Image 1: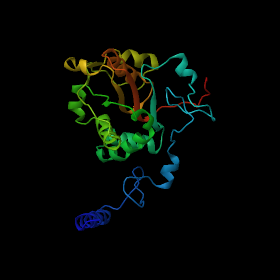
Image 2: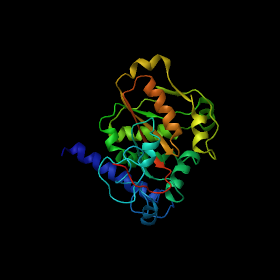
Image 3: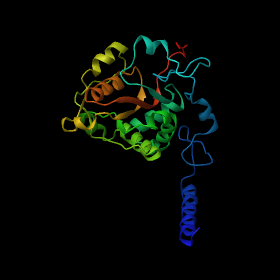
Image 4: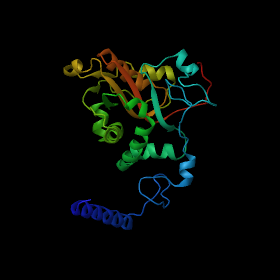
Amino acid sequence: MSLLASGLGAIRRAGVLALDLLYPPACLSCRRAIAAHGGLCPDCWRAMRFIERPYCERLGTPFESAFLAGAVSPEAQADPPVFNRLRAVACFEAGPTRTLVHRLKYGDRHELAAPMGRWMARAGEDLLDDADLLIPVPLHRQRLALRRFNQSVALARQISRVSGVPLDTGLLVRVKPTPPQVGLNRKLRAANMQGAFAVAPRRKGELAGRRLVLVDDVATSGATLNAAARALLRAGAERVDALVFARVVTEPRNASI
């Protein structure tokens, strides 16, 4: 190791120590003291319902017990999504998962995008391995002007840093100012999102044969991801997958092989 590299390492370590003194490491959810920045305390970690295999290879929903690789849930067989596969870090439910999502989205806690994005990159490794582009789900310009922050872009930026997959924030456009989806059933959500997205007209020629990964914070019914994937596939994309931090899960189901 050169003297320069050794000196830079010492400076970084000193900076970390100084940061810890000024801002002691705290749990991202409950703010309890922990050993290092950017993590959860043991209680919050245990409370996170992480999604791991076995799960539906299409929808990413967990199964009750072990199944063969490639298993597909009854929901995915009965009503296949427009996107190819979905992966999520955790189930969206009360507790640390919901706290992190709400603080990032509504609480101006933009720094949460870094650890959340790193977890997403791990959860979506199989999607990212051969992906050409990350496409964050866009906000309509009116909503972006009010909120001044798109959490999907922040998460995708971190996923891009970790995975090396390029990020494109201008390819997909939200052309319809849809009302909030809260309280709507699956059918109404799908109707609400119909025609909500379009590919920027000047960029349609860039999509032929491209493998894309949509990025969002939460998947509920999948209506938003389906609408976005449909617009990208119609413009020529070869494949569209989806990667979210959390997804709504009711009951773990069995699979059809």
